[in-house]
Amino acid sequence: NAGVTQTPKFRVLKTGQSMTLLCAQDMNHEYMYWYRQDPGMGLRLIHYSVGEGTTAKGEVPDGYNVSRLKKQNFLLGLESAAPSQTSVYFCASIGSAYSNQPQHFGDGTRLSIL
Amino acid sequence: RKEVEQDPGPFNVPEGATVAFNCTYSNSASQSFFWYRQDCRKEPKLLMSVYSSGNEDGRFTAQLNRASQYISLLIRDSKLSDSATYLCVVNMEYGNKLVFGAGTILRVKS
Image 1: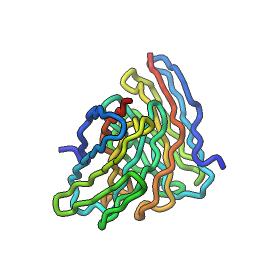
Image 2 (image 1 turned 180 degrees about the vertical axis):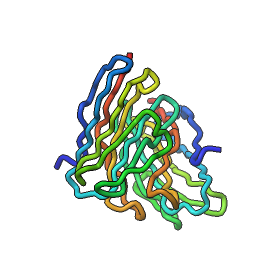
Image 3 (image 1 turned 90 degrees about the vertical axis):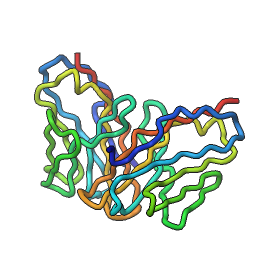
Image 4 (image 1 turned 135 degrees about the horizontal axis):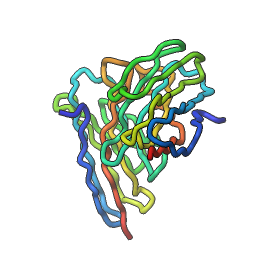
């Protein structure tokens, strides 16, 4: 009964380092999303995917790349980390976007860039 | 103008009080609406969907006003455990994505 699993849960990076955040879901959901949450700003959509092999930009895509090679996994990459990317990152998935189904969220990844 | 706007609060209320939150959205073609709850440093969790006719779940009542483009959440008989941030969420017509408000902080005190 895992739902949405994010790894890692915490990470500290130095400016300029790269890393990949992994989101995995076991509910056979088509739609997957990456958000970042900063104090006082709510959740902002970075990138999303409407199915295996597809990705699209959200509200704040700059500095991030994503891939959806397998339906169950959605990867978020930071090629050259910057302090402005210090945030809490949430992954979410949903079976159908055009319904009253809720999004299922992972526990979040707390990322600090020094 | 933000796509989804909420009063950030915080709302500080005593136990047993009734409190109401409002949220406005910009896209008149928005299709579905939700209230999520988020506890400190945790992931958001669905509290309830919001239906056109209004809906109730125990002490919680949600209403939608499409003409004025706002939704509301009413909490009756507040409990200490209701302390959290409440997120207004709207499924816009375009982009297959949900748009989140910044959240309203509720603090229930004994």
